Amino acid sequence: MTTDPITVNAIINGEKVQAEKSFPRENPTHPDEVVGYAPINTKEEAVRAIDAAYTAFSEWKWSEVDDRIERMQRAIQKIKDAIPELSHLLSREHGKALYDSEGEFAVSLMWVEYACSIVKDVIKPQVKEHDNGRTIITLDPIGVVSAITPWNYPISLSTIKIAPALLTGNTMVLKPSPFAPLAVSKVVEMIADEFPPGVLNLVHGEADVGVELTSNPKVAKIAFTGGTKTAKSIMKAASDTIKKMTLELGGNDAAIVLDDFDVNDERAMRRMVISNFLTAGQICMIAKRVYVHRSIYDAFVEKYIEAANKWIRVGDPFNPDVTVGPVNNKNQVKYVQSLVDDAKSKGAKVIKLGKILNPELMDNGYFLQPTLVLGADYQDPIVVEEQFGPTVPILPFDDEEQVIELHNESIYGLTSSVWGEEEHAIKVARRIEAGTTMINTAAVQGLDVRFPFGGVKQSGVGREYGEEGLKSYVETHVINVPKNLELPYIPE
Image 1 (cartoon, helix red, strand yellow):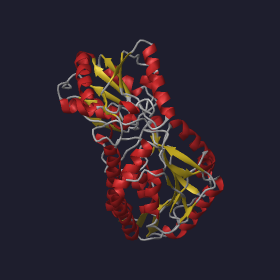
Image 2: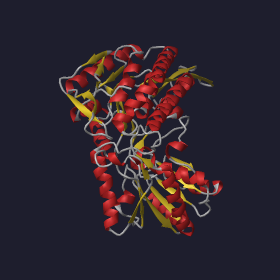
Image 3: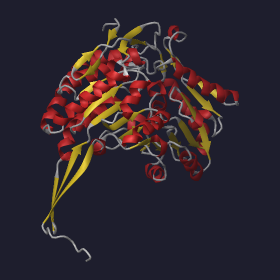
Image 4: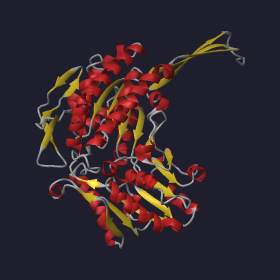
């Protein structure tokens, strides 16, 4: 695989557009190495992309769904053929281990293929004959969609928006994160090439581009994955034109370990560790705090450390033995370390986990050795805030009422997990305030693209994946054909 810097461009109305300015994306493993350059597009270029999508929508909305599916399936095959190269690029610019990058492409394409397989049935018009005549219900595309995606899972969190939007007849302008802009740009280009000009557009840029994508009156819907604070600004920007929104936001997802959980179940312990440290803990749906029933707390911690030390191997993402690579960027390293330092200063015990396989990289790259935090207070920042990095606090609880309250008092509610005897765990799960609760597993390990995904409270608006993920890109249109055309009773 080449390690020469690459350059990606904006895509506007089917054409690659070179910007006057660009920015470098470094390799988190070797920060002195530039992986590639992405454009700094202007507000005016964002307007051009929106205009192109708006013009293309006038015809694309009438396209046959079979044609949309065929185009998307061709794009899927192109991406599959390029996975070795694209995964390598993603690991270099992101920092995630190569197996993790390959897994992201697998999940991404699993969703796009599933969306292709169900879209005809999901948006098929319904005709209902009834006493008063006939009613036709159609699901029509909304219009231009602005998609803004984050750096932690750039491929998955872009295709989760692109596939339903285009398959249901919308057009799109997508803006990726500057912390992982390269591989996703290649994927968007592959998809855009299979569709008419203007149907899928790509821009990069700074705050002014984001503001344009969320406030321009020609944009009908915003699809955003990212932080809750940013989402609040987006909602304000979109309010003047009452745009449709799908927002998948932050979470402080808890794992609740009940008293009947088997601490000697090595496979379950391994699932728990992975749910904390996959992608160096930089996943919105990862288990970020663990509550364990006090009766098994000490035994759980002992077995957890054993499992973590077996699975966690830190180092170069291209080392086949590595399971945890560097953190994506310097600011995230500082933030996560500050939470750990704060907990330690308040008396918490910090235990380093796993093995460092490439010690020569640790000082120069954006590496943090995964840590377990014991003895933190329930209200410490490391517990109540989203760490988004390789550290996890484990805390004891005394009864189920207490732990349910600890879980539900959070402003977030994206995902959660309950670990224990299955029926007991389900009973507890029913009382959890979250968009998704998994039983005896967590994070990506429990994800199923056939079912809706999203958060409650300040973790989001709307759902992605499943049939609901497609329906979030359409408007319901009711056409009534009554038999009795006489006016209803009107008082004289």
